[in-house]
Length: 296
Ligand SMILES: [Fe+2]
Ligand SMILES: [Fe+2]
Image (cartoon, rainbow, N blue to C red):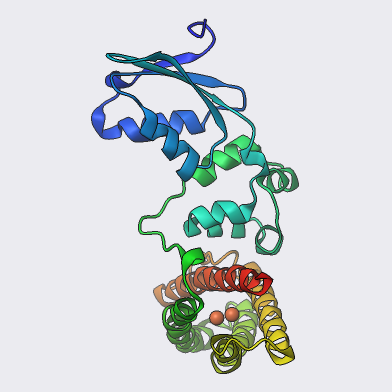
């Protein structure tokens, strides 16, 4: 009865090296209510767990033939991913954060926004959007949601604050040279520098606020008005940082160097983009981890 309705795949016919990727790709590309029959010489149950746990896919799994020599399974996609929140998708893989940040970090990252809502707002096809997001995978994913508070705060300080302090100074030095040499021909560079100097100040003060006040209070398990007000302050800084970055992105055409840009200018643009992406991850992790912490 299924033969005529659904595409069939004989797994043995797909080359071994690419088998897993092709199979998963085909299944993830199914639209709701579409199905696929998989024919294989062993029980494909592991695939069931990959789809459910790794890809959080909603689907029906029906055995048509269940061994002992051949197995046939019909997989039908059910609706479900549309109502997944952006946060859930990013929790599965942090590398997906920049994908959503490129739409609009304020909208996508600060609320319980669903994939369907993102698709609606930006005139995208939700199926295509989900396909693109599912394809983003990075190895050695840190599962930060399971870390204890102390480890998390160390990670933020040692991984993000330390690196961004160095990068902020490097960009500052490079920008001085670039602006001195090119501002006559490209006056907008002076505007970039002004925004950047503000960003630099806000971020350095912000790291100090976190390391010397907020994180210290969190480590001492204090729950008082000072902690609440420091947390509010930090969240306000995150918004301000994003706002300044938005202006810099606009001035630099999304960190894309102009055609005649010299190598040093190109290097400066690249460092600005790196800083932006690092800060986005950093602020996102702080926001989600600490929001959860305060909810407990
Ligand atoms: Fe931080
Ligand atoms: Fe922060």
